Length: 296
Image (cartoon, rainbow, N blue to C red; front, side, top):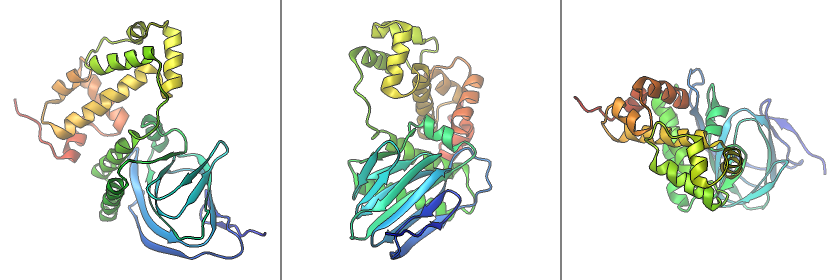
């Protein structure tokens, strides 16, 4: 069987066989790309394709999130192959090479959101999306509504904004909870409970966490990394930043008070770390979330 190869971009190509399949776009929205933002949703698509079809991303530079609404799609990397069906999500981090194909004659429909930005890869890594993976949210209808809501926001913004960036991050933070975790051994579980209870303790150290786990510092770091894919103090900082973001969006507490609750003795150090982590200052995050600070 011969194959036709149609380059869609420097990073994506159609590698289907001779007989073309039908492609019908229900919607394709994109916002401008000229933005000095580290990470933002840049495109939404809703498409149906019939017939057997093969496509490939090569070192794809964007972060892609695809949800299958009907049909079956096989996603294949060098390491693994996943079959996605109705309700499944497939995540493609920046720099990935992945081949995907409609593997049934039934029409395949999927919706997708693409993310771009000056530091898209760093943000994907920080959020826990370090490799291509299949996820299955327990409430597929709810997640589809979330994606479509973000798609509407993309359509309404001719240029990326901090508010649009925040909406995209909220979707990914919601999705992150469905990433399967390796079962942690009891010592690592104790350390995680200590992180949860001591998140406001600015003096908390990796050595104290290792002691709570009953391990040497080096063994603790190795086992923690094997379990979560990141060092223990980076894990702690991610939880602190998530808590800070939620407090800024959902409460009117002062930045100084939030900094203290998240383990910072200095509001200046907190603001600097927060801005580096999210690409938004605490004030900008609060403004995007439309929560007014408390006076006094």
